Amino acid sequence: MADENNVEPMTVVAGTDPKAKATTDKKKRSPRRQKMPVEPVRAATEAVAADTRTPRAKSYGADERVAKLALINTQVSKGISTLKDAVKSAGISEQTYYNWKRATNPVEQTDPKPVPAGDELADLVQLEQENLRLRKVLAEKLRAENADLRKRLGLS
Image (tube, rainbow, N blue to C red):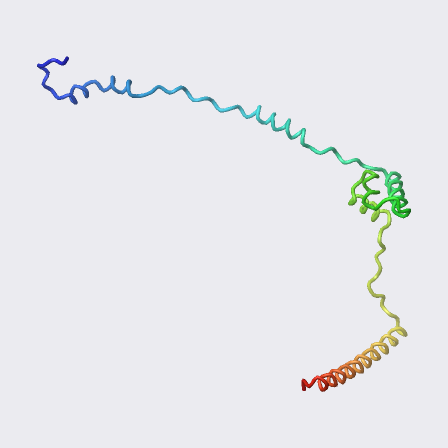
């Protein structure tokens, strides 16, 4: 029970001791946890990366390549299996097969057009003139046929 002689308002009484109120209202927080060190995380990702790496491609010698290509060709030519199946049974990919095949049989590059000599040049000019004359004859025949068809259909 309150003292009857105390006439001061309650706010003044409560405001006189601010430290007492502040400590009772605040909750104490636990200290923050420290961040995880970076090194253990790296080690874990390196271990995962090491497991997910693909195995290193096997390299074949020239003799092995020729033998595998010959095996594939014989299987396909005899009709034993399709090219896809023969390549798979040889243990290589289709792309590897085509790369090896291209490497063993290189395509020879030829000149696009050999330059004609003096006498050949005259023959070439004569052939071009005959070609031009034949084109004109063909064009005239097609025009005549086209006009005849238009007359029959009544378009002109």
